[in-house]
Length: 205
Image (cartoon, rainbow, N blue to C red):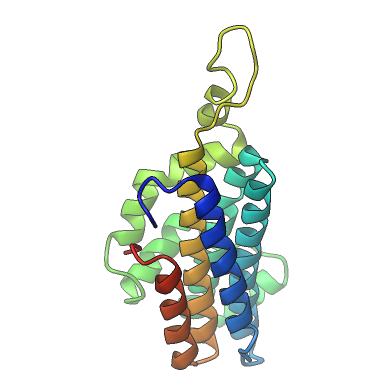
């Protein structure tokens, strides 16, 4: 991500990445097991949320765009958990209409199985989760963005904050794309996705 890049430039980056990642993952074929199908569906949902977030930002619908980031992240988290951690019974339960464990339980399990460094996901939850919930459920952030000017209800969200969320969404889409490649057991596609992302976002971690 370029520092202080205007929102228009961030949108250009996002459009390029969106086109690239969709084209690359469309080459994948995933196994037909319930585990693979459930996990792949959730990763694809995460990518679709990213696409929706991009389109909303492009059209200036910023609050709705910000509200999509938590569902996008949760779809990725669930996809990773169902792929790497869930039992067959838990997968069958979801198919029958059940619910997965809490996000915290999923994060702990993913760290314990080696998919992420221990503490990394939990630290992210501690730092960012309340803000993500506020964006999605109409918390204090969404209220303050409309009530900053006394006597008026006018949306006042800084463009650099929107650009930051859009870039975070693009990064989460990368995780979901790589998750699809892992389900397909295709390391070459995973490498291609990482190369494409870091070409477009040269300063990304």
